[in-house]
Length: 268
Image (cartoon, rainbow, N blue to C red; front, side, top):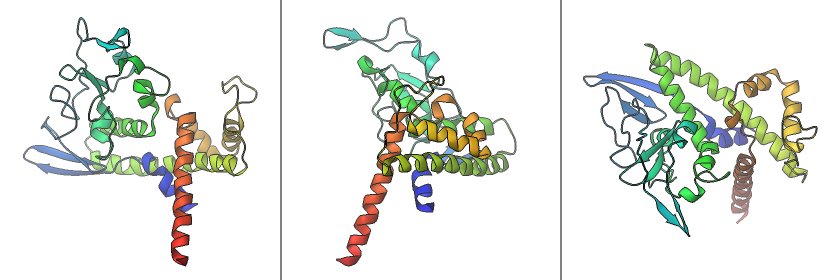
């Protein structure tokens, strides 16, 4: 159980903070990401015309007309209203591409999402349900980076940054791990019993939301800690979307295969 807990929830942990003061202003270390204050530039992914300092806001230029790209017989382009829907969204005029502010600064260096390095410009599928901008907004990596970004912004409002972040993040890490562990436990049960996770109608008013959501509701009724956690999560960060369920199941299956492989090696 502990192994499943620590492996599955690594993406849910928030950053720890260390502060080092020098002549250039305080340096804040967020999960291995060192950021120099006073708007000193730091090497981050993305073209030169989007934000390079984490203390600044995302670059959101407003053009009378964004460049058009032809997809099949139709011309598509970046739409200004997406800024209002996604506060993290950035647009590069140089590359005619969109980026994610939160993920550029807070994702791991190995993450190769187009929203971090190469830029997303497939305007045809930009707001499809499970891909593009909308799909990125629901991903575990993005949700984790948004949490780290929120934590960073909150820390700037106080003078006791180190103490505040250490205490708050340790508590948040514990709660995130506990929550994800329960989600994984439910998914593992449904997988072992070979029963479907999803229901035909998963709306809040549905009398039968499917095995996964119904089991989660049962857990919540019996666990005040879990109930408090889920009630305080944003709607898009409850880790109940089917794409995240599939991702967690994939992680668990890889762990099982690795365990089997390790056991076989012992006998060879």
